[in-house]
Image (cartoon, rainbow, N blue to C red; front, side, top):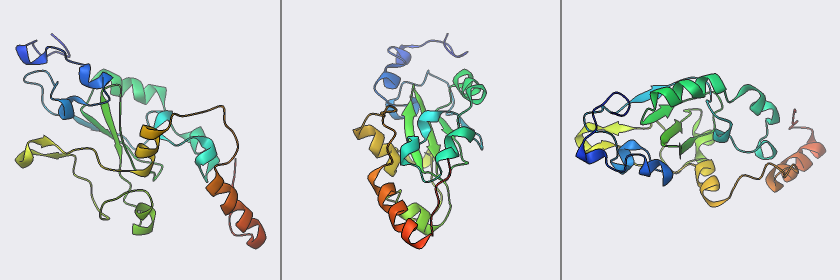
Length: 177
């Protein structure tokens, strides 16, 4: 038995999707009879679901994001998808077998630079189309698929250097933290 569901022929190799970066629904390794589970929270359960501090306009965002208590609850539940909010940074990333999704509705301008889909709601599950909807493209998800996090680097990202340089001349943008 795993997660309270009886072991069966189809769950041989269960968890292999997590190692490959997939989630239960995307890899088909959900134990037989286990329903598709979506959990949700307002707050961000893991620091890895935010860009590095040097990449953020609001540098203090890390101080109010990531909760070991919340993440422990998610790990106990092991949902197929955990939807969260709070930061307005779209993310669709699988970590340790759980797909974490933040799809802030924000404004069309907010989504335009961070996603490749039409402004609006994100569908996570479609029973008429076979279940879990494939991962959506989001800027930061793609960034961390291509580049490893490097927490040793503390200089501002080049785009922020340019933004704050221009703002210093006009006084429009201020970085806190």
